[in-house]
Amino acid sequence: MTVRADDLISVVIPAHNVERFIGQTLQSVLNQTHRALEVIVVDDGSTDGTAGIVVSMAEQDPRVRLIRTHNVGVSAARNLAIADSRGEFIATIDADDLWRRDKLARQLAVLRASGPEVGLVYCWSAGIDERNRIILPAWNNSAAAGKVLREIVVSGIAGNGSTPLIRRKYIDAVGGYDAGLTLCEDWKFYTALAGVCEFAVVPDYLTGYRLHLNSASVNVLPMEKAIDGVTEWIVRTWPSLPQSVFVDRRYTVYAYLAVLAVRQREFYHALRYLALALRARPGKALTLSYLQLYPLLLAHAIGLRTFRWQFWRKPEIFVEAPPSGAQNG
Image 1 (cartoon, rainbow, N blue to C red):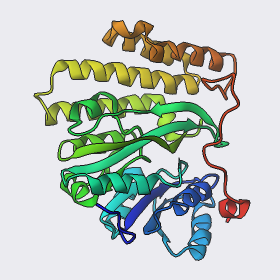
Image 2 (cartoon, helix red, strand yellow):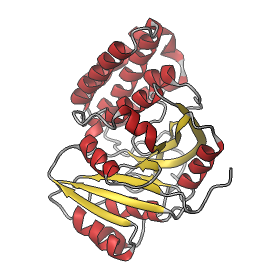
Image 3 (tube, rainbow, N blue to C red):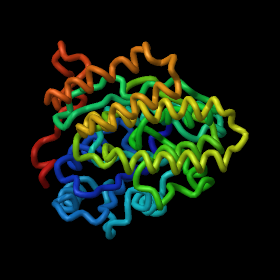
């Protein structure tokens, strides 16, 4: 089916104290080749210049509008924006991440070419640093499509909160994000969606996922607690899932937590998580994905905070930063 130019996509951006990045994020959204957008930023009780930057950009582009609220948390902020939106399709992006210019157009083409049972199209992500340099070229690159409940439980295939394009009716079907969660909320949301619709994927790195030390998602012990709570919810919701699924999930979770702990220089916790990952799946000990964790740990232990896997190669810039006026209002 031909993509119609008037297919309105509502872009949802929760924002809390992100004045350093919100201009770049907004610019990467406004630069999309698919032009039929409404961009809803929820200023979630920011105390810095976030709101002023958004207001300035909204004056230049009427597709942008700002909702202000006290600090209700990322899930409630997303729900507020979705409730205020008009599009048949919803795309979410965190306020420090970036998109390639053709991301939404390519996802919409896949969604329009699919049957109505496909409710979410995700894409791959590259990990970027605070200077937009690609430091982890393949942050997520799953090819899972169709009925993906098992895959989403095991590894959260969509990768982060900035990859999906979603049919609104399926968001309504699951009741939106769990407003009680501020960590792991996107994994729970995608899992709920996998229970009511099928997924599709654009197998290309269209999202730049920001990896920086001030990210809430690197607060490792609260993240572990949040993931445990989501696991308990999955067990209650789908009690027939085989135990092997949860063994695989434990491996993925602990390997992920090990990466977060290393980046926070919490080396005791990093080693504990590495051991727990191997306890879940001993056969993973010699796989490349597991072995890569050791040079990451060593690099951070000796103070190389800008470590990247391809240390021998000058990193590619994911998206060039917009002019300084767009960032600083």
